Image (cartoon, rainbow, N blue to C red; front, side, top):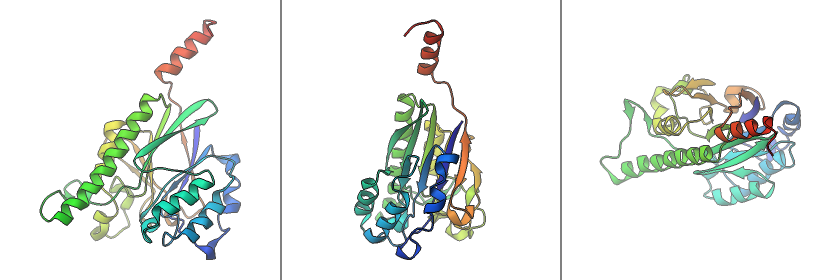
Length: 258
């Protein structure tokens, strides 16, 4: 089993420095990696990013993140990313990364994602340029997620995880006002996951939502916004699938072939 720790919407600032570090220091005993599902800062400033960096620097497990809408607020998202990468955090946007865990290749595909709504109640690429640009941006995020998941499959990852900030399904928004669903996620993200394949989707953003959901294709979705979890992080256990390459290698080893 792969143990995946995840949390989003920690919204750190200088006033909350050190709040999560004691819990994060225990990750070596409970998890194999930590996923951060965006909204790591309150207003996307470099000062706040440095607080986040100190919180996760030198942890006993690899850390992979996407940014959230709060991390874009000050138009310093590139600087926020750079500060996190300086302490070894892998920040994804429309790309994937492979984390080795005890000989198992765990692939994470990440995008912030964006809004637009869900099947039957969603925006479309029609009308004003602003509306078309809104949905096209969401579509680009979804296409990047699908492309990254396909790449991770080609790289023979035994476990694949989609990491987003915005939600791919309405399930995990239960508890939020219906009026704001279109601004909390998009069905296009779920379509990307179902088309390319994944073992788990982790997202944040919906503070009043629900932890558990599923895509129409049967992929588990988890809302890990900290207000939903009510704790420093959640840990999910994923079974390791035997890939074609690893099966061949195992057969060769049993036959005495090196």
